[in-house]
Image (cartoon, rainbow, N blue to C red; front, side):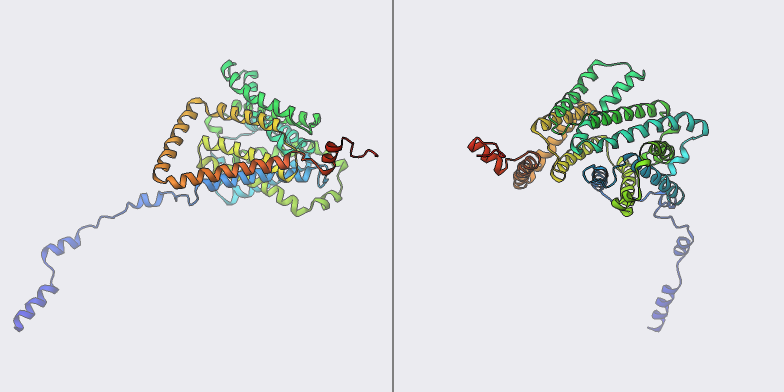
Length: 410
């Protein structure tokens, strides 16, 4: 018995020849270390987060600017100075980000020289400054709702400018497609209750200069070595635009400026305004990288609709049914022009299949969803019309019933 135990212990302690060979063989790694090191971290946010951030910041900048520039409240009615402040703040922040983060590493791929800066950046920055001045001056005279309606004509202005500068030959089919945008905006303009010609001219001028700027970017900076994302573009354009706007502000607005205007607006408010405007440019970079062209188009349309609605409800800007009709035509024409009929059919077919599959698997939820969305739209229309139209007052009702003017003596 003792001999068997010793044999067993010996066989357990002494490895066999095969085990020795296996232990000396190289061990194959389970994961390739090269791949593990170079694999980029996956995004932790859903694309909807970037969409919501962009729509929120874009709407906040417009409403914030309107609140400051509104002549009735007279907080800070100096649009050129406000734009100069935005650009100066953006210049400072882009310099900081370029030295502390990787958000502006794209600038290293841009072959920027002094000659390119003078021949491309400066002329484009000139029209960029004019577009910002015209667009912000319009807030002194027009409502946010009407300004958003006029901005729907930007693709038309870009198309006409492209033809005018000889970038592409005129195309009657494309002109017919964009004509619906123009017709819709014209109808909306006729329906505007608080139409001010000065503000209208400023806004159309801003749109025109913006169209020239976009076409110049396409012509002068279209090659691969000059491709820039919005934040890199801001890095190069903000300094020159800040200088140009500052010169105009010194001549036009600074003589009427006093410290009382800063105290009335508040330094913290002005700082927050510039920060929101800069964060908007940062959000655009992430939005473009995480979404498709369809999402970008629909997000822009949704943002405009929300701004018109909020403007009517918060600022009590009157929006007539004729304006809604015209703006609907303009938005429909804008979507058709940017996407085209083939894309619209493709997306519509995909949406119908997805909706049918959802209805087959969740019929009760689909019915509840239809009822809920219909009720929300109906309530929204009622509330919107209640805020945007002049409802009859007790004096006007009395006038209709008695036939007497409200201020007339019996």
